[in-house]
Image 1 (cartoon, rainbow, N blue to C red):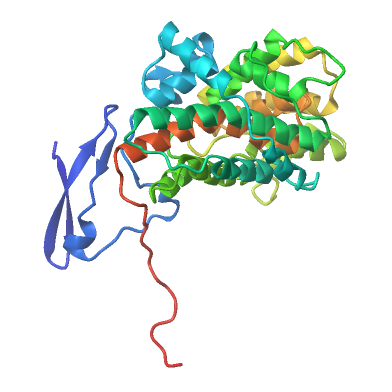
Image 2: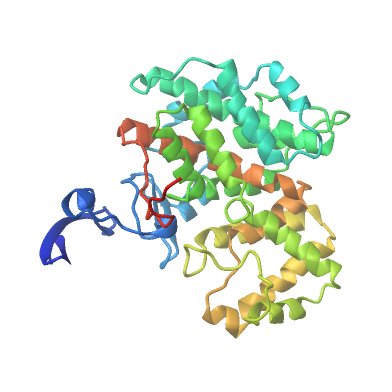
Length: 421
């Protein structure tokens, strides 16, 4: 098999090498394309463009495979805690018990934020969208920690990583409490990382709080499933902002803004909004299934199928079980969640959806879990960001360590040609 690709243009032939990843993915190395030919590629949305080489996440949409650093998402969700997966993504290997204890202890010690951040939080109206609040608070960390991080210093990098891992759940929980009109909670160092997230979000001031094992298990799985997903919109944003040598906090803040969009992190919010619309219309799921199959109808069934996974979303298989456990544990009687169950069963048994492999995806089940836990719909994307944080950190760190060039896409200009003023 040839290890290069030839391009014929204007009676000339140009040769470009192939590169191959460890999972046998192949790509054409066109770094010298413009220099050799004067041409650029045109690829809206970069659907066929590899922007980097990465050792972090492998995704095969056709086969429904997702692995972090070589470990299957199924094994990690069954056997690892979120903090172990975060360590794996960021540092490249699963931690030893000693490394895990040190990492967890460092995070506990840094689980405080400057009280002046409360002033920034209070300045937002209660109606402000939580993702805007979270992005602003994350960006504000720069002001309270102004020293730039020396990427060559392992100690400084670790300090920045610990700081963000420790403080981000506090900022996320404060955003949630602001939306709910509740007093702010602080970290409880006697809890694990995920237990602490539950504690800060759900503890009421007049009650003691003991996290439910079922709730913590579901949160742990959700956070792991969202921890990284290759070069998606928000991760690419973090990398391209970081490629200008912007700091870690600023780059992650930009990722939060990218995640905010309804086509990315807002998908599970869109699921619940769709279910509520079906309920408001009378709750006839068969009617809306028919609308979804009608090509002339603009209605879209949210939470089914996936842009990348052409088969079943592997994350959905895992989180479906957790969703069933949460609903059983909480004994919730919610007509919106009953509609979700009905849609799920109809889609899994409908030849139209089976043929097109339009199965419920991770956003469908995560939306159900978050609603069952009493998390406001507009907070769903904040929960997504909590899970994606270690992936953003890992991708930023990899990009900076490799000293990748600043991102600078080209364009095909289609405006007016030169004209006189």
